Amino acid sequence: MHAPSSPVLKGTDAVRAAMARITAAHPHVEYRELIGVPHSEVLAALDEAHIALNEFYSSVPGVFGVEAMARRCVVVTSASADDEPDLGVESRGAWVVADVDSLHDAVAGLLEHPQALAAQADRGWEWARTHASASASRAAMRAALQAPAAVVREADRA
Image 1 (cartoon, rainbow, N blue to C red):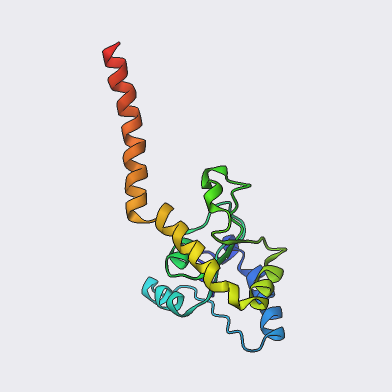
Image 2 (cartoon, rainbow, N blue to C red):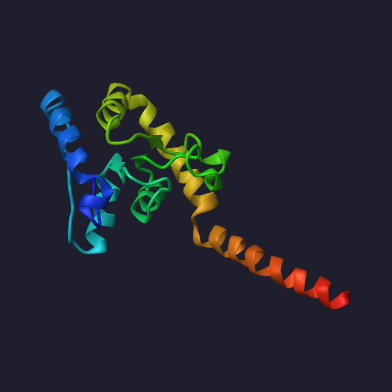
């Protein structure tokens, strides 16, 4: 499934082209594209999906990608620790990295190895839980806010 907030910015034309080829070669594959629907409908569709096609012109996973991983979907996106080191090495393997040129091959590869989808989805779920959950975000925010306060306290002592 693909649920772009902005089809041009998310690479929807490339997704449509890749999925037209995929569904022609694999008639059992259902492609769902949701645009302009309520968030609750997107979440319900993620609960039924196996693979979520996120965005393909970005170096970080979008909100949709994080939500998809949190719902144990395999996420395919252009986000990469090679392009965005702040993602950290632990992001490697959490999702399938593909750009507009490699999207078809990435999805075709997933379909060729359906037995590997659950393990891939579990890696994404773990990454989302550890790095993008409310509790993880709260801890990161607390650490970020405490760092400048420590510098101010140190300066006050000097």
